[in-house]
Length: 161
Image 1 (cartoon, rainbow, N blue to C red):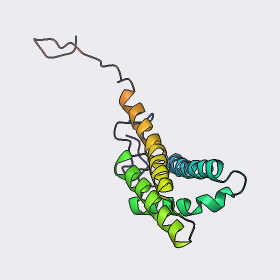
Image 2 (image 1 turned 180 degrees about the horizontal axis):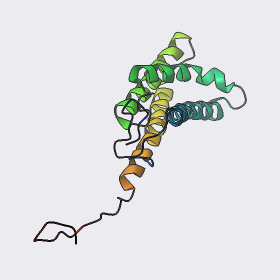
Image 3 (image 1 turned 120 degrees about the vertical axis):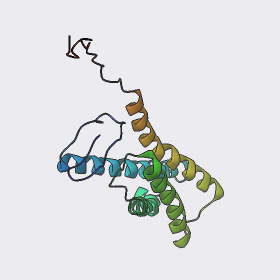
């Protein structure tokens, strides 16, 4: 299992590095990469909104900041730095908070929350934020098993032959 020194942060049989221990520095790099993947998902939502609703008229950070803040809330709620690549519960909690808190922040700052936007953002964030975690889990499941070595034992004295 992939584990940082002093704690079980493992893939638990999934992912490309399952079965190995890594340094704290390498583990921190994986956590930053996972956080960046979630931010890219949110930026993708914002870019989708800018391109389809108001091309050229809206600044991307202006659209995405509520969801970036919400993703940070989700990371805190899920303690995602412990196992950021896990689909359940980490991915579901981060995605749920990102969507719900992001929509709530848009309402609070009077950015407008049309029903179609709620549906599209719900689906897009689910597909992307859960999707990269699911792909990683699937890669671990489909990874070939290590070859099995069998040893023949002598029936008389029990020693390997």
